[in-house]
Length: 495
Image (cartoon, rainbow, N blue to C red; front, side):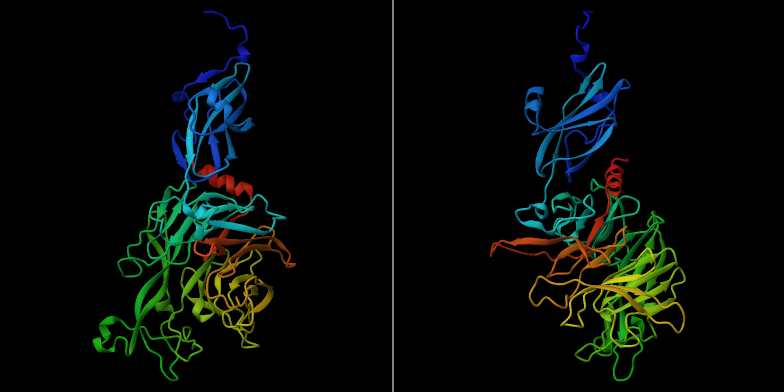
């Protein structure tokens, strides 16, 4: 064999079959621009250089002319952002060392959906990030994740969601993503969009043909799953001085009494599943509210409010308690876990008689143990929505106390009294990530000094008027740091 005169200048090609850890897989379509590239490295390689070119290319010459990104690394994986969705890319690895080598050319493309088309949907930045610059956030109406500059970097590709309303899109403690499609299902997926777990939706708790999932679905720290559902029950109409709820089985009702004496309506269920789809715990408002006056709230027009409208929950594993938000009652119900007993009903200020919140959306607790909610403030038409932090009663003679409140403000004329939507998430530095309800549709970070650290507005182009209008967003959620984001990305490659 003829000896090579300049071995350091020759790039040997490593065949595809010898590269067992290549990702993205050859010819794949990705639902993101933040990509975790993975590759094997020869033992004698000191480092590697990843090269990315725009287009589907099949020769060294065309590849070299179209390189858009070069990244040197001493590891066998690296996260790189490519410029655009709906675009083909070609990439390869150069292995640096005494005997340089290169991989063959690999190909992938980024997909696209209408919701991330920036000609139609945008996140307009109103205040640039002063902190959390490496964070990303989900906007569930757009089925997408954005960086803090408002650029889409990921979208939900799962089959069956094209025309569906996706709610509560968020990251889990285990490094996956969960979401709800009302009435259809609850899902856990990885970064690639592959379904990891799906709720059974078999009516085991509701007694119906399905569980009627809605509003919130959460993977708990213990690996179990908890979802809000509904069951249809018959309630005796409340008249005069009667204030107690009476749930009556259909077998005890005469046909002519339905819609006259009794009202058929949905009531909330909470369901906890393990990873095998087994129901390990459940709770029903029809059972726990029955015979009590918890549901008794007269509307402004006189009739009794018969629909609690459970719209969020929080599982506190420190105290083994579940907090259930009942929007139409302007109340949060505290449930002892696992016995299910109601240990608190919060909302009304005992000193003033005025509620701490009204038409609230989401409830949670801070690391310091304070309860907080997003208050739509629908009872007080002259006031704006707020974020409210509350201290729970600590003894029988104690009462709920407000410890902090932030008035969210408005850019919209006559936008007071938001009807529904919105949420709050506590961040590691104890500031709050807030998503406001429509028609404001602002998303921002605020600290305890009421300083805005970042702010954006979700908007959609009205094709008729050619004007930008607020998006009817349900919730937004945040991935607060790069480490958490990287964990999500790398978890998608664990097959």
